[in-house]
Amino acid sequence: MSKLRALLFDVDGTLADTERFGHRVAFNQAFAEAGLDWHWDEALYQRLLAVTGGKERMKYYIEEFRQDLVLSQDLQDRIPELHRVKTEKYKTLLAGGAIPLRPGVRRLLQSARSAGLRLAIATTTTPENVTELLRNTLGESSIEWFEVIAAGDVVAEKKPAPDIYLWAMERLALAADECLAVEDSHNGAESALRAGIRALLITVNGYTENEVFPDNALVLDHLGEVDLPCRVLQGEMGGERIVTLPLLSNLHADAMLSQSNC
Ligand code: XBP
Ligand code: MG
Image 1 (spheres, rainbow, N blue to C red):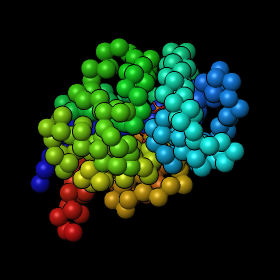
Image 2: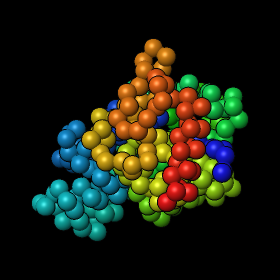
Image 3: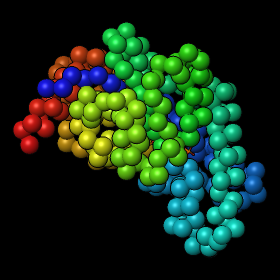
C-alpha cells in the first residue's frame, strides 16, 4: 500500500476565510472604482461561488444574473482589467491583516514540516494572492514551505476540473495515492477526486457547510486547536478532537483500503 507523502492544500476557504473577508469585498471595491452598479452581497456571492476563478465568476455573473446586460465584446474586454484591480484590492486587504488563518492551519503545517511530509498548494486563485496570504500570516519564509504552488491560469480548466491537482502532482513527481488533499468545497473535492486523490479532508466554512461531499471524505468544521476542538460533519475521527498527522495517516490508509475493495 502506498505511503502518504504529501499534503496538498487548497487556499480559499481552507487556509483562511478569504472568500468572505477578502475576495467578495475586493470585487465590490473594484466594481465601485470602475463606476459599475454591480454589488455582490453575501447571498449572491454564495451562488456565484458555483464558478471558480475571479474572471470566470464575473463572466458568469453577467450571463446568469444580469439579463439587462449583454456580454458584449466591450464588456468582455473589461474583465481582465477589473480583475487586475480586484487583485490589488485583495492584496491590500491581506496586507492590512483582514484575513487570519483558520483554526489549526498553522499547527498542522508546522507538524507536517517537522515530520518531513511534503507540502503543496492546489488552488484556483491568482498566484500572487497565495504568496501574499502566506507572507501576511505565516511570514515570508513560509512560501518556501510549499514545494509546489499550483495556482490560477497555469491550467486551462479550473476546479472542479482535475487539472490543477494533476499539475501539482506532476511537479511533485508523486502519484495520487501518495497524496491527501485538504479542501473546503464541493468543487475542490471533486477536482481532487477526479485527479485520483481519494484521501480527502474537508474543512467547511459558512459558504460550503451545506454542500455534498464524496462518501470517503472526512468533513469537519475546521482543523481544530487544543482549546478549540473540531466538529465532525461526516466520517470518523476515532475519538480525536483535532486533526493530527496520525489521523491523516489513518484517513489515507482507509482511502487506500476502500480503493482496493472497489
Ligand atoms: C477559489 C476561487 C477563487 C477566488 C478568486 O476556488 O474560486 O477564484 O474566489 O480568485 P478554490 P481570483 O478555493 O476552489 O480554489 O479572483 O484570483 O481568480
Ligand atoms: Mg476553496
